[in-house]
Length: 113
Length: 114
Image 1: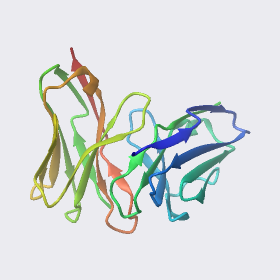
Image 2: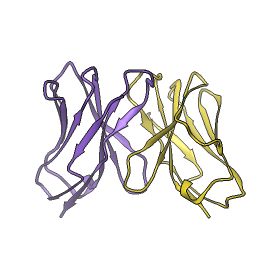
Image 3: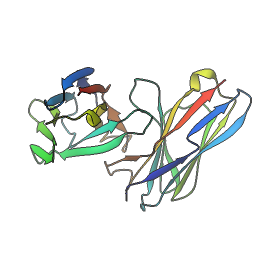
């Protein structure tokens, strides 16, 4: 089973709202990733967690706040977003941070109004 | 870091024909090359990958070839079907300070006409 699940599937939020995206995997993977994908572009890495610790932050604005409560869960807390933050947010996981095979979830389509 | 270039950006083929997408990479230390398929409204799906110790890998109608000397790898889809229509991304992993980062190509929109 190589399934990564994400909720919600769609999210519309105002610029003053606070919301969270959730990601879950039960493959025993110890590395989890957040990517942002704009239309007709490849995914762009935002954050990497390895063994529940933040390993990589690709200079993402502080209005995006990741959290890894345990080895199966990854959250992305959103606050005071801008319309240009509208995108598909993808979660991925891999066996370890050095393991190359990354498995992606279906994504959350975020629209900021 | 790695630099991955992908061509073509769009590809249209008739059902039953073959499709080939090519990627070049810059880091000669790279040793793993995955291909992802992304259907509309879905996340990228790992469909095939190859490591640098082999030159070709096949899985039913899809295959990947690797030329380490020329630093390029290609995805081959034979007997294409309409359900193969999607965006395909190649990628190369960072072997350096940002271990775990995947560098994606810009993507190829494949359309298979019935």
